Image (cartoon, rainbow, N blue to C red; front, side, top):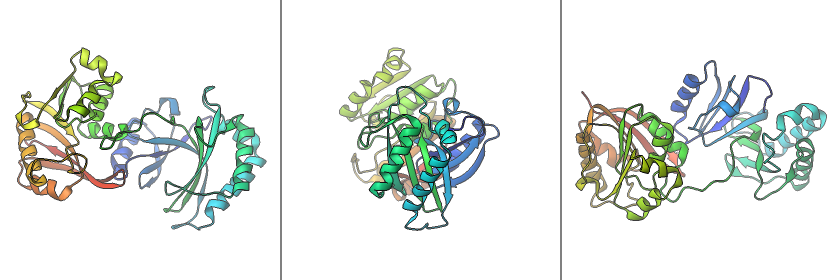
Length: 352
């Protein structure tokens, strides 16, 4: 990446949450400049190096090495033109790019070249690919591994009129979320929208595999997290997570199985953050709209005055129908995409 500030980053996130992410960049990185707001990504500059960035709302972060303006819609040939131009740049300026492309760790020993059009893998002419791989390998000292590489260099073309050549900064690998399980960045953003802070008591009444609980306890200074789910399989998987062991032992995480509407839970909670059933991965008893209405009424009763509730919902019409008859005040409604499915994040407040 850049050896001196300003540092430039291309960071991806859940489409629809660009606004909260932009606010986070501006508030946490004084002087940061947002260069482009794209669907599911931000392009920005700041004086903070990657090792100190600490922005957990992003799925992946890259450092752009070359950016080409292609115009809206782009040219179908750009996937060849830009790589060819980059090959020329790398060959003519090896000293400059050797430093920019150098691996950040001695543990990184291999790379692969990834070509993408709108985040969909795209082909690249084989002779051009091999020339680029040989040049990148010569500059970085890394070997080519088209499968299982330690790091990646990307060509990404976007419909907004950009083609980017980038070095990936975030680590590859790690366990993939199970079906119906939230990604860690999305869980973190939901907790952030819940305003979680010191001395707060928080509830996730449909905790599933525990992504929200994990984000809340690891990254927010709350006092306690109450987790509830009637699915014993997902609850058991959550309780086996090594990352949650210390919170269970210290009783900062209080987990129990059972139905939300029949469980004994403390009142005067500060916040509720949850991903309630969408009627897809987990079925509800009866009509989905009736379920949401009952859920909102029960949550309202558990929250203290001024408390906040954040829900991720994949059935907005059913949820909004239930919300219309609820005493909650709607603070924010954010349309997003989760695994290609349309959903919406609702931030509600219990009126004083």
